View (cartoon, helix red, strand yellow):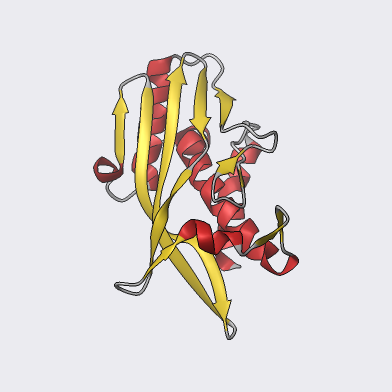
Length: 186
């Protein structure tokens, strides 16, 4: 719950500057998509060139990750790809103890003048427990949260937390520096 509250607080400045947010939902097969079933969303960056957008996103990657050179590749002014590890891709509770599972995910941002095409995040199927040497299959674990394509009531909070976490990463990359530029005068 602490992580969800922290994430909401991080997203509030983004909403305040009235920018469109990327919002993907998690499907029973482990894929993300938009509510209307697309595997991408177009985010407008009015009045900005592809070069300006690329520079802003690359700067935001630097603000989001400890060592951006290890997670980011790109074609200047055209695209940015991220492959990174998150320790919060799946959650379960055993005997009242919350246990986070992590693994690798991939993000892709294609850039043109005035807009960014954000691909739905991809979570690699094999993931690791935070404990050494324990592996699990993401898609098979995730299926247990759904019944007939709908999230089970008992798993709704966990589902909402991991979806908010993934969307938070994407939106941080899209908007961190523009929010900082608007609020900092240095």
